[in-house]
Image (tube, rainbow, N blue to C red; front, side, top):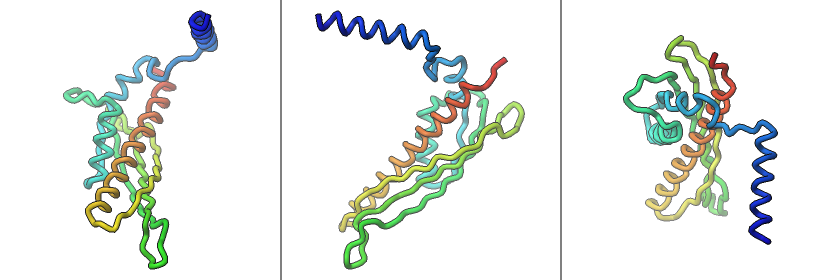
Length: 165
């Protein structure tokens, strides 16, 4: 009885989603190919390297092929002390990474999309210097991964709405 109920619920869900015109984002024609055709240029430094690597992975960059788009990134990093002790030493920090991008069509040379992703993460500051540096670098990596994910989703949604005719 339980198995038949689950099967009926899955079948009903599939029929409802099929009837409402739901289309998965990456099922839109050309979105995956267009994402793979984005060449990312990031500023020098650790944060730039991290976000470029995360974006190349997320977009599925097809190395060895001519890019369809070029993405120029600008990064802004700030760090705020939080959880300050009575001796004015911070025990926790908030790291904010803002990644502003401009997507340019290689064919026309025109900027076709701009946007930005702002990510805030927190991390503990330890009394040991190595542990504190490791925590800060981990926060930087987590912020870069999240910013790349947000940019990828924004680009995929934008590409899915573009007229390909």
